[in-house]
Length: 86
Image (cartoon, rainbow, N blue to C red; front, side, top):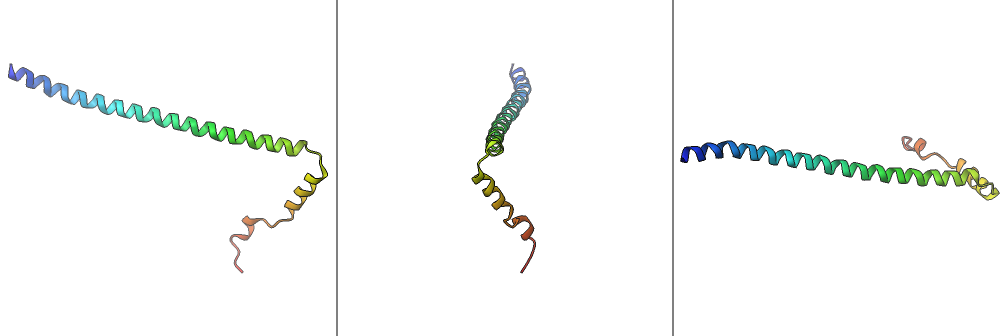
């Protein structure tokens, strides 16, 4: 009887360990997908806000806005001056 119990435990223990590892792996993958969905939703929300702002700019006919945009065009591009030294 002791041999039967030892044999059963010898089979059950690795099986239990495999089930535990698979359960952990699947829960980790599920959590990773949840986080990716949250990040994608945030990025989508940010893009929607940017589009709203651009729509306002495009449809705004005020002379003040046009003057401000022209003023921005005359500013130096920081990307062009980064690599240059004195």
